[in-house]
Length: 520
Image (cartoon, rainbow, N blue to C red; front, side, top):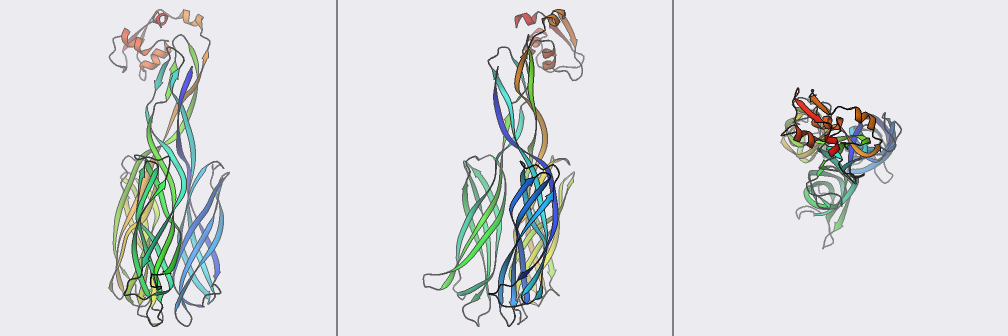
């Protein structure tokens, strides 16, 4: 007897953990830069380069990149960045070296202060969200050949298979031109690049990605008497990533994050510095799933023969829900005490930080903040550019029908829209739309027959069986179990008892004739 096997890759979440670590360091102002008088704006980002699983622990390595915009002593502004490598070992019980690790780093807090004009102190709070995944190959028989009279029992089951599990990257390149009413660029002092409204569509052997890059630049013009200039562009993009395994109709779980970027100023056709080239990478953590109906054989037997079944039990996660919901924020913010009076808003940028998620009967309750940084032109002649940061809390219920407390879900947030409007010299209005993306799985178990070994048939035991049996159906009995127990087939029992279906009622009488075995 030969077994025709079918296979499916599945992923099972073994453990989840979120840890916070502090990182403190001093950084020196580069020799090529002037002394620091006042910090205007600082920002940071975490880049994880490796997440290595070991026995009961994870080794994370990466770098904290700190960007600093400051006012120089003697006037004017400058900027620089500093990269600080780190390595952390995080205890995580049950992790094995062969596990797949999904790790994300988030900067929960960053504080930069001046020690002296040539040295700054950096205090940061890093959050690591770690998921340990066991990627397993489920295997089971769906057909048997080479043996007559074999009775098979299948359990059709909708299963979510993991088709693609990898990291990849696409590069984006754009060029923008300074408007005619703006001066030529002498030096770009500060820039921000943000990802907005990303969309993913799976096609045959490809992943289509589109969205917008929001690019802001603060620059110094060539003429010294001209004030600092600022510009903002929305740069739509559309690109494709080859992916041999994927197809339309599959389910994507792709996390996108802006990676490294480079800003270059180039001359236009007239030789003037008016073209700004933007190049960046879009880092992708790609998981693609496919829902298939598997018809694994869960039991088999042959009348007049005995088999020892080889079974395999397995655990898998079935897709429960894929949901994207949005919530709006509208808040008025006072900037008194945060700096000099506001004359004009240059740029506003925001990051979603989800502090807590909690399962409820109505869905997932998400609590978090929108961290907003506003760069503005101030009424202070000494420091004409200033900034402030504020936290706007939000609470949103993500509807997840069918989700249970024991189910596994991932929830991530991003900024879809953000607009800051000046109301007066000390007040601004923030309007934002936050996207909360959720994917949830239900952990399930199953079994499948993968092989069978024929055993000797006990003729003496068979001879002792009565010629006719009247079996009274008990609670939990199935026609399959009765037929297997009495070494016959379901078809024979249905014909002998004039049954229209395989469904049985408790207390029902089933007639079983021993002679039927001779005919099989």
